[in-house]
Length: 414
Ligand code: SF4
Image 1 (cartoon, rainbow, N blue to C red):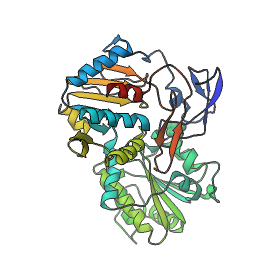
Image 2: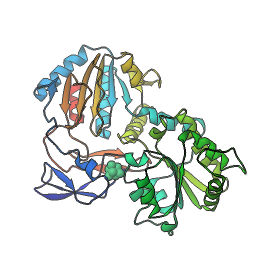
Image 3: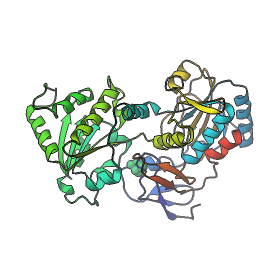
Image 4: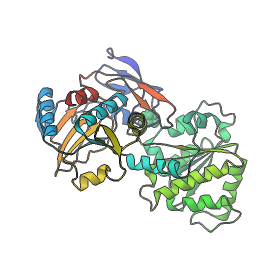
């Protein structure tokens, strides 16, 4: 628990980079980020405000925690098919989700698992070569960023990995950053001021064609890429000693064939390795996606979309897809677990909905029961996995607003 007006270290739970260099001033209830970092507003938005709910609610009526638990138990016992929808939780909470599911033969899905399966599909079908954030920060001399919203989702990617102040990279001012997609002018300027920038503004559906051209003497014309730009790119890439390509699968979801884009990037990197060193660094979603897929895989053998049946967990990518299950009403109760998400939780009024979520959670419709819980890394300690899977971070607590954690609630419900 924080002392009056003390300075505490915060390990950020709000995206898969999990920055551990943040300090906050806290009086035990409210916290403020000390340095003017780009995520300051985002982190401080989880402070309690006049819209926060710190008491359990049944529809819009405040009820006691013990009543809320009792009501949920009644609902759980009277429903046949329960879906637990993970909107982001740390490791201990995830263990409790699995325990609950095993007691009630429930289905579990993560809200971002569609993105996870895009990347996993490549690993299963064609293979890929990956690197870590640290290796990229210290060794990469050329970094290709493909997408459009990747810096919105992981705002400190530039400061912490692409162009950090301190790194082992001997010529970091000569680092080449190649942006492929549609990036805001502000981002382009920020990068241009600190290294050599090449900006290729193209429709992301054309990425496979562009990468094909880079491996040929002469390829077909691509809208937005001149012959001179292609020559420039080939020149940078051929001189590179360590090239890293990064993307967020969610950036491709609106494109015609996201898996073809990811396949083409991974295939390109595999081919480059015949003559030089290159690797992929996909950035996963910001809702503890990696924590979920890692822990689910150790404990059940599957990364997501599972159901407890006859004493074991079964996986089916189609049958246990939460979007389909909810829209087709193939489940009659959804238990939403949301400890870090800033997004409005979609509530389908035609089925029962229970939300165990942080106090600033918002909904498209009021759920049947809402229990506010603490945020890992803000209200209680926990473990989360970084996007590159090689580091598990220990989250700390920086305030005490007397909320239970999701693990304790789930264990009471199991
Ligand atoms: S980049 Fe991600 S982990 Fe780092 S401070 Fe911002 S939201 Fe938090």
